[in-house]
Length: 185
Image (cartoon, helix red, strand yellow):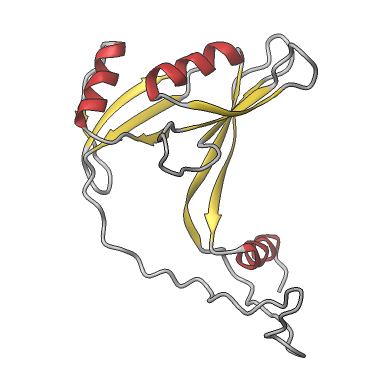
């Protein structure tokens, strides 16, 4: 399932009423309440509210190193070396779902979660391949996208969970994690 946090019980109640679903206790870290929905392609979406925050986890990500930039050279004659190991995941960034009918899925997510389109991918005029969608937080900054809906090509192409992306400490941490995963010492 893909979990989507909603701001409070009122939002959860409206969502449950929209689809005639019930609100249940959420049996996961932090507890709270959940409404379980199924999108048009069968993906389970858990809308969650009122979770208790867990204690902050000490992030053991490497400290950023000084970087030479035009006109400023804080690091002279020193190589930048980062230990190879797992990346330090800070949070879930986004998910990509391959859907069978883009417009149907787009409408479903917009109706229930108030998502707005950040960018729509049109390989040619009048043909939409997918869209980056984000929470509508008005003037409050938020990510470019929370979900990307990609229209699966061809008749009969099944829906597919395509990937999740995670925010890590920095680009060096990303590459160190990559090397770790492929077995470079």
